[in-house]
Length: 220
Image (cartoon, rainbow, N blue to C red):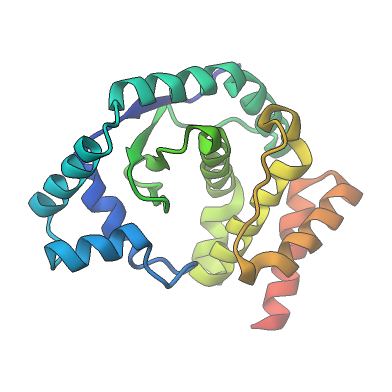
């Protein structure tokens, strides 16, 4: 089995990308407290200012970034084989990516980019494996039908299915998540329940996504 390598890094300049991306989130319109604090004290979103802001935050809170990254990577190393084995089985395919970058962020909202092959993870070490698995499920979906769904049915339907499918973490991965739940967004709760029911009945991710499409098309 070939596994995608998750490369853990911290780059203050990347914090700008995360702030910019999450400030335009379609899933959560309200800005995070940390982003609002930045705007209040630094004004307009600007990469050099964001770098200064996050460096000050890390220094003032005495955060040892190297130690945090080491702990996050160590926790992921313990479960990555089990995650990829199960995800490959669910999607009947492995990820066609040699590596994906996981950038640390001081914010509690994390963005990603399929094209640039990165996602963000927050500093809460107890939650990072859930975040990593959550984001990787997006990648699996993208490479196994999601890209086509976005092209044919539009960004909203793609996003609704993408975010709702992470309910699979509560079905297939609870032992390696040690009871940590993937809660999802309020607007996706009904669809997540339908996905959970359908997936448990069929055990087939593609029947489940087709079922989602039929439901969402009726609603639109």
